[in-house]
Image 1: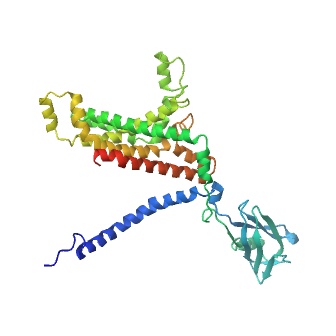
Image 2 (image 1 turned 120 degrees about the vertical axis):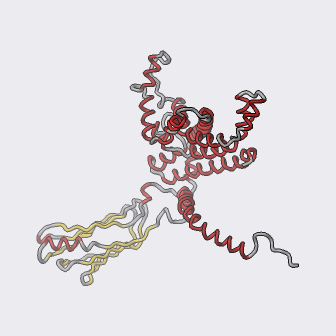
Length: 409
């Protein structure tokens, strides 16, 4: 009797595998377009000395105008290099002259063949500018002639080296990032904000889930109120917090002064290290509802027989939580910690709306914005983004290497 083929290697299994890959291909292709290609673009730009001005490719620019009156009428071509530093090779200008125009003498580097004007400027350097004026006479209505000229714009060609697509690379962006005296302080602020923001959101979500794990009147309304920080528009809640804790007109300062807690107004979002603590508290308050929902769903799926047996044995509420509930929640808490840490590490809008990255609250994501747009150094901003990627990659590796193994994930 012939031995059976190994499981999963028969013709039917191979056809099923091909069908599965065929069904998955659209999804994999979409993920590649949405995630992988932008990530590769960030890596590519991070090793390029790219500024905001370099996003527009170097090209020759020409403008055609009709100048003068009567016998002094001229067609003027204004040609310039869009870059102040990069040369352009093989610049040529061609224009079809409308029949209403009769050109006068044409000087070098232009040649008139019939009604076609061709000019060869060769290679032009960065910052190149020139004006080419050709005498012309108009037959017929000048307005019609001008409309005809507008409908027949000149064509200009030329090739230039594009810094975004060439194969010259540099690590100056990374050197600039790591040599900066502020980088490690920014990294420390990011770690503080991410770790304490994540742990605080998990602890507050766990506490809220324990409060609402029992059925009582008004439970649905209270759950809805708990979700308000997460579903409310971030710009609205951030503006509310800034107004509430304003040192001059905020209600929080007025209340603290009236109660005698503070002798004067406190600049909550403008003093170190209070500003960092406040944005971390805002992170905890805004995102604890997500942890609350997941933890509550897991708690309600735990078998209640264990708690009834613990009650019969005289276990205290703390003992029931520590020895019964917490081991059942470690899995979901670990997953939430991983997701919340990654999301918090990448957070930009909350800090930017609250402090703009001032008063010691500049994180790596805010640094990406400042490098790319405030300083107009796209390459340095991409380099910081790559640093963020590798930090999260290292964190994910350590998480799955140690923490998830202990929790059985």
